[in-house]
Image (cartoon, rainbow, N blue to C red; front, top):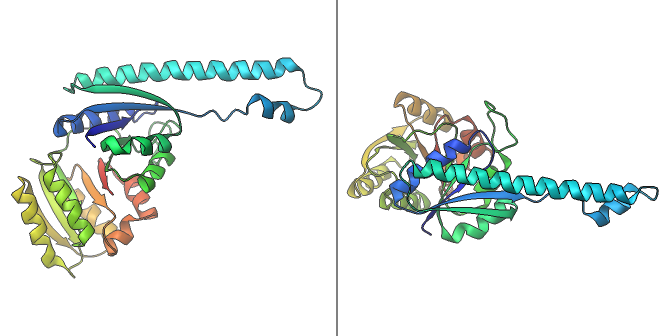
Length: 280
């Protein structure tokens, strides 16, 4: 599980994905895999077409439809190769040494799940090719991957700039402590200004050991217990401290878990103006 894998497509977010992946690859000193998936065509095959068109149809219509589908596939393949080549050139200019280009046919989720055993960090854009520039939405591919994959995911939300700080939401649960251990041991966020926050005072005494663990691994951390609604509290803290990266996950069975699981995760990612690391 050593590779950083970046999902590249023709969406406006592709450049941000490249830049985020290059940043992560150099921080982790890990090889970078640029992945482009050619989705399976929705065009019916010839056998299905022969039944759908009807008895009076001419054979040349089937041939033309098949030829058109084949041409579309060849163009998509060539376009994908050019995108990967451009992406490789971009990340190499940012200092990435080991870069692999991978092009697959199939479905994005299936491909990512097949590769996750060798994936240390997955990088995806918030929106895919089906969304237009300036639109704010959560792509279906990302939502499906977040629910199914076990790897950490770095979500790029537009133009990517290397963050100087991060905010990690924490609830004191066993699962959250495991996430803290992963963050502490990883060089990805080490050296950045860290903000460890809890919402609610029920178990605030468990915040200090988590902070100490991060500091023992070279992290500079400020801890804070917030009050009120989880979404409002986190957004207000982020704005007040100019947080440039969020780190969050599904922790235990607490209010933090209830907030981050399901539609609330989608809401948080959709509304964020900074990159997000989703811990599974």
